[in-house]
Image (cartoon, rainbow, N blue to C red; front, side, top):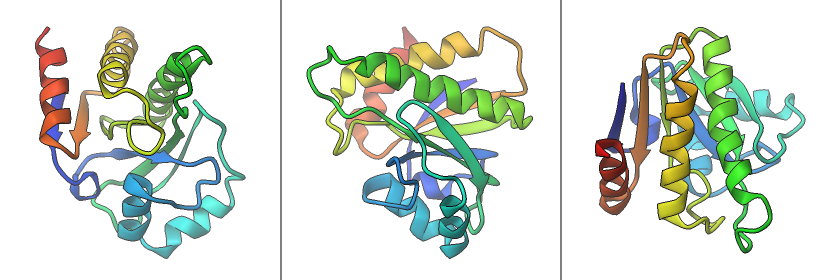
Length: 166
């Protein structure tokens, strides 16, 4: 099941939330900072052991003080001109995050709008890539039953809802 919510991703009761992280995995602004603050200092301690993360890849940690049992950290691409492999890297964020969740036997996962904040990925294109990537992954049987696109704004929620209805 695919669904869209306008909510604070740190408050969701799911098996995993996805963190739109920077390559250090040591916290930052936006959703990354919010997740680190809500999860508590234990998250930072575990992230220090992960040796960062490259763009398009994903790593998993415990959820600590969150309702979510796990956090899957992925590093989205910074938008340049759209001709530097940004779409493929963003697609990899979704696919690699879902693969980690499935490998861990998780059933529910929530994604933020990866790369659309300070990384300036065009929101319409990013949403299209997100929905297509998730739908493609779910064609293969796995433990994943529910995927939530957790949007901060009403505009993002409407964007995802229209894509899911198509």
